[in-house]
Length: 253
Figure 1 (cartoon, rainbow, N blue to C red):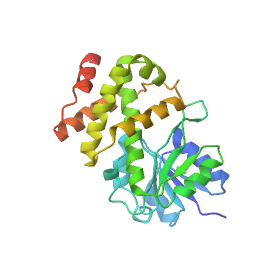
Figure 2: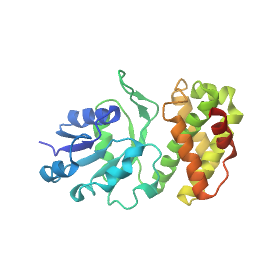
Figure 3: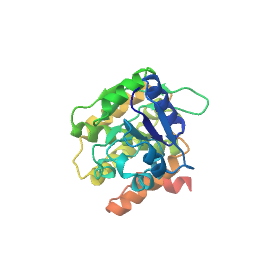
């Protein structure tokens, strides 16, 4: 029998990963909010992987309470991730998820999901059983670009969507000036948060490729207002001006 996989957070996304691992023959052990990760880890000493599938807001508390035996086996899949969020963790694997899963619907692939780390090939094999493509990255610097790209996609569509509504295809077709202004401010913020000079043109081109992968994707989800507020909070903390984001915030309140 193959080694087991623990999944912390058994929501929509965690369920997709669980299906993939089960199809590969890995026993799956869920860790819900009502369970103690430490107690599960006491019985599950050396899992093949520990997939952290909680939402963005719950990630840091979960990582802070992570049992020591599991800390070198982690797989992270949250949006709004940057390397500073997991640089203290040994041998972490990160996947930038480019498929969505909503209640009552099966998953929908937008484009291949890049993954980097010691368990990237494991993710590729597990998700392949479901028809979800994973692109294994060879270098850590590739991961930086992919994480910033996902942040750019999520923040641009959600924040611009607060004003424009509609789909990502409509956003670029009918509200391009707004989308470009939001995207530039998001990239500026990502540069400050990462301490890296980023290729604006390459990022926007890659974002547009993702738009083409699912042009009917809705811009604005339930998390959009919170994402906008977090971006503005980060901007204030970093001492940078984000006038387009601030204007959108003023218009929705």
